[in-house]
Length: 96
Image 1 (cartoon, rainbow, N blue to C red):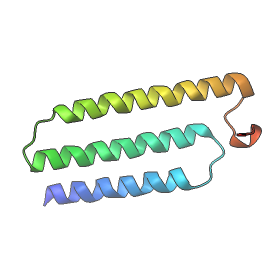
Image 2 (cartoon, helix red, strand yellow; image 1 turned 180 degrees about the horizontal axis):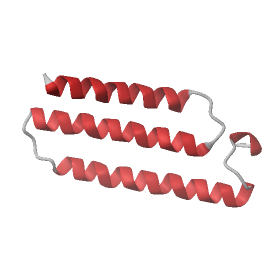
Image 3 (cartoon, rainbow, N blue to C red; image 1 turned 180 degrees about the vertical axis):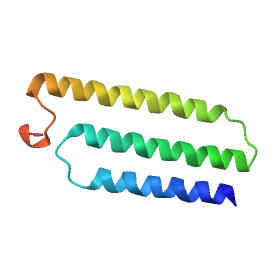
């Protein structure tokens, strides 16, 4: 019963993160935070699933390594955008 409650909370986290990601925001930092929130919810879902099937937790460590690399890449893009454009507004630069 407790695992089902944790799964429901993780699914709600995933849906909320996706809703924030697809809604229009003017700052890149909000989009990056929503992506990290989605990754965290996927991590919780994988943790619950691996506990339920009694699987080895090594895959979770690999997932965390890739999620840290994704976060570092997003922050480096954010920093380079702030250095070139002066802010992280999506309206201040042209994507073409």
